[in-house]
Length: 347
View 1 (tube, rainbow, N blue to C red):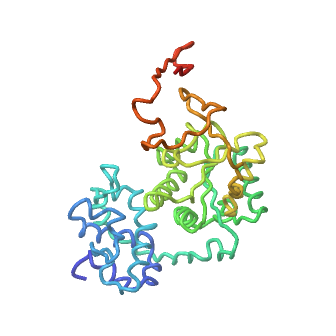
View 2: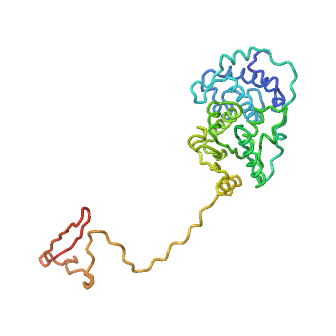
View 3: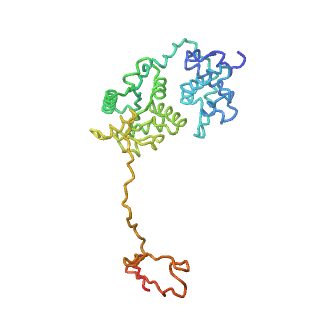
C-alpha cells in the first residue's frame, strides 16, 4: 500500500465493506484521507466535503453510485468521534476543522489487531419504521431517580398515544456502543424531544457526557438543516431562558414544568408529533355592505347641507359659475383642545 491516504477505498472498496470495518479503523482511514485533502481549513468543512461531485476527493476510488452514501457514512459516527476525541479541531468555531497534533499521533499508532465484531445493522437497533407512525427520540440528562422516573412516564404515555419512542432504557442494552446508539437515535428519528432542565443546558454547553455527545450530533444536523422542525424543546424545570441549550433557544417549546403538567401543553406536543397542529378557522366570505352607506368623513371636512341640491355644471363649465358671479367666502377653525379642531364655514 503506497499511499495511506488512499487506503480507505483499497481496504473497503464498497459501502458494505466499509460498514464492516471497526470504528477505530474507519476513524484512522478517514483521518488519513482528511490530512491529505486538508490543504486549507475550508476543505475540512462538513458542508464542503459533502458537496455533489466530491470536489475534495473525500470518497476517491468509490463507485459513483455509492459516493453519496459513503460520504454520509464517513461524516456520521467516524467524523463525530474524531471531533469528540480531539483529533479534528475547529479553532474558529465556524465549522472549519484541521488535524490536531493528537490526530497526528493517532495516525502513527498501530491499528487494532484484535478482531472486532461487525457493528449491528442500523435497521435492527430499533426495528423497521412503521408506516404512518412517527418516531421520536427522547434526549435527557440523568439527574436522579425522580427525574428519570418522570421521563420514563412521559415516554410511556407518548408511546401509548401512537408515537414510537426511542428511549435508552428500552433500546440501549449491555454490550452496545453508546455513541453509535445516540447517533442513530438522533439521525434516524423523525423528531428529537429535548427534555430541558438547567442541568441539561449546562452539560450541553460544556459537552459533558452523553448529553454533550448528543448535543454535538444535534447541532451538526441543525447546521445542515437550519429550518428543520425536528428538534422540540420540552421545559421540565427552571425557565426557557436558563434551561434551554444555546443551540435550541430560538425554537418554540412546550412547557411541561408543572406537577402535574398542563394537559393543553401535552396536547400541543403530541399534535406536532402526529403532524396535526391546530389549524386556524377557514376564511369567511366578504360581508354584504348596505348600498348608499355614508363613508366616515375626515375631521375638518364640512358636512354637505341637507337642503342644498347637488350643483350642476354651469354654462362656463364650472360648478361655481363664472368668476364674477361667485360668492365671497372665508373659512375659520376654532380649537377647544390641542390637536382637535371644530371647523365651520361661513359665506
